[in-house]
Length: 279
Image (cartoon, rainbow, N blue to C red; front, side, top):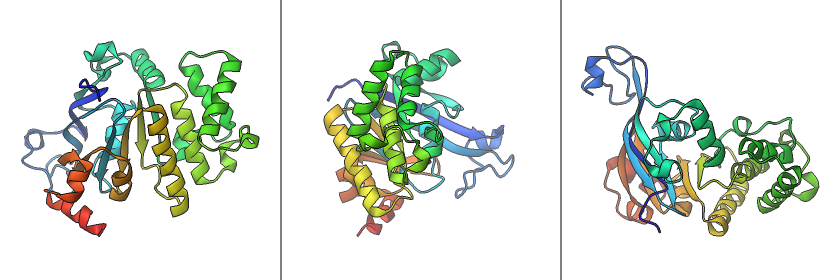
């Protein structure tokens, strides 16, 4: 594993609302909802920092509303962070935060250096397009214009994600939820990103379908050695896939470390609740 991280996030914060002197100091926030009792501002993320190394899977676990999906939304430019910095090793040699760039620069980062799989496939796919066309759309955004190259790449990726060859030109709206997630994964990998962002990719799927999607992610990690940030509320999923894990509660990181270490010896009370719920 390289010592230089492929992704470094420092002091990421996201608030919804103007803020006020009371909540800015952290002295007037409701402990349960993370909103300010004075101005109503909600603090979705508070001073979140972590690193991801080459080929590593970082798990982010926490209950609904803990801020874990907001982290991915900020990294993929779906949401504008309030403060913080994020550095990619392949962007300006890791010296310039991705959030400091212009709209054009951000689109370039999103199209070339990142892939994202959404919890809701409708956010990541054009349901009326064929699976091949969905992949081609991502490749065109990454400045690949050769039709033969796009078709060849799409075929390889769809076969890799176990979409039957005879259904490659069928639109995802005719697929099951598990197949839609596999098409999303193929699309996210089409630009060969160094980092793949996975947001609750098994939520809402039947257990047998979940198992197939998780096996696919393990295979991708083994075959392509791509770094991943994996968000889940399910510690069982994190246990299966993540090398290291950060635990989120109320927009903050309350515990971090090697996944095995967190499972075997959780320190924070909330992490202990998560672990004991698996027993």
